[in-house]
Length: 351
Image (cartoon, rainbow, N blue to C red; front, side):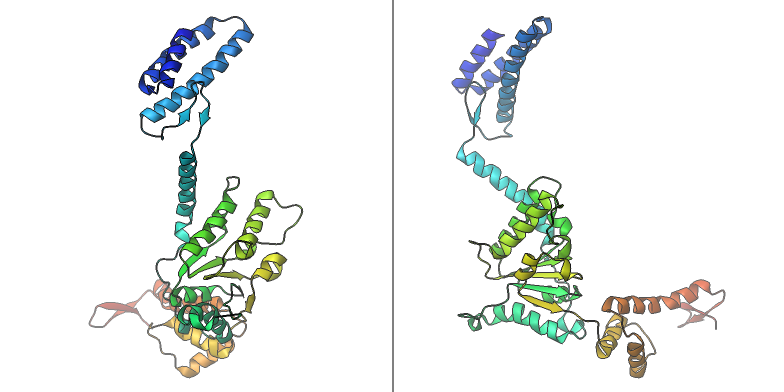
């Protein structure tokens, strides 16, 4: 075994990797036979330690010969010395892997929600236009100390974000906690860092974080290190030394802004409270959600319904309209007698 491994090391040093691999294999077989019959525990441990080193080298040569790995400059004893190119390749592969995980966050298709589709909320829409639309269309206005907002926090609704994604001529990143939290140690903060790097490469860009309180809640003594590192990385990327933030808008949405970390809350320079819709907005919402569905309601009916829906949010009104639209189906389900309508093409419930 010693004779064979000496020859293998010699071939390895001469970069004759194929012959070295075969000799390593043969020597390992002989070493294993020797270990099997060795009675002295100390000698057995020494042999096994050497076998592990030779086995590692044999695996490296096998990967090299199969073309699965780049050639590494490795000493004959089995200690690997990675070249600078190898380190760069590994770093690029890891970065590409992280960016692949974030690829789903890029909104490639517009949600087709216009500003007019959002009933009411005129102040919120004007603030978003000021932060998103004007810097892109009139960059000459933002000179000197006049700069666009870097962070906007929406309190109460995330539907406006769809309108922003549709109307803005920017790359739109829509992320949640599931996109940025990983079970692997240190990968979550790297995901956050790569997200902002992608946004800088594709600027003008918008990063929308729904339910941001789940990622950046108040820091406490009992929280885990991984959670704290994610928050720290967010703070550094949003307003850190050496990080350019021009052309990037961070848009956050939450229903509990008081649970956000104070440092994170300061990063959102503009905070917009989205109140419950007023009577006129509720009336418009009823018409929007009803759409082109056939109905017999007139303007007075919509006004009455909007008045009765006081205290309802936009989501509540959407559910209300859907419930009303399902009522004819329920009548059909419960009916026992039907009659033909429209030249006998359809059936309808007998009164």
